[in-house]
Image 1 (cartoon, one colour):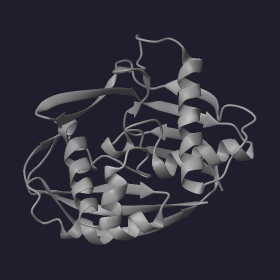
Image 2: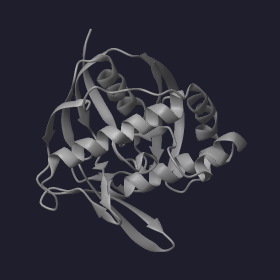
Image 3: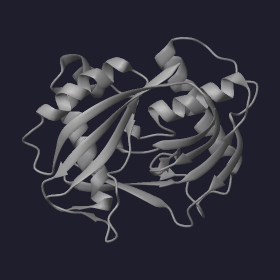
Image 4: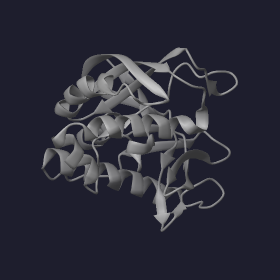
Length: 239
């Protein structure tokens, strides 16, 4: 197993508030995908998009990315083809009013034992129609863990085309790192939509399937709405 990553240098054309940055990056990526016929079909199709992205880095103290400065952003996918096409299309998207990706560097990451996962962006988990699992709204941690596990299992089966038989939930320990819900905002049909999520520290189990699912979280994102910036992870490994 491998996931693939683009380390991108992004030039900011106008000031971007941190909360708005998820939508700006998501739209930049989706527009770039739409310029390739194969990726356009993937993005228009319902279901998993097989990629995720992080925030612009470094974060500014005032939480506003400043016009005229450059930042880095990472895009990951289990699919090398998606990353290869994006590496070309992202730099061709020169008419975006907010961003310009100037340079992309591709890296390939083989599977290694994951000791800990940390979510850098809010992890979105829907527990009912238009209702998200958040601190204070739902105290059922086991339900949260089950949905996170099931989501990764579906991603694995969809991408690799094979069944797996977990012996347990991939999560051994889950720690919620935020006291208040974390928010991703985007616009749809002229309306502001808010996605409420959480940031986690997760210790995966050590068995083979749990480690595979933790690796999928790194390559495709944890939880839902990954194409909007949800569930981007970093890890600690045992080398």
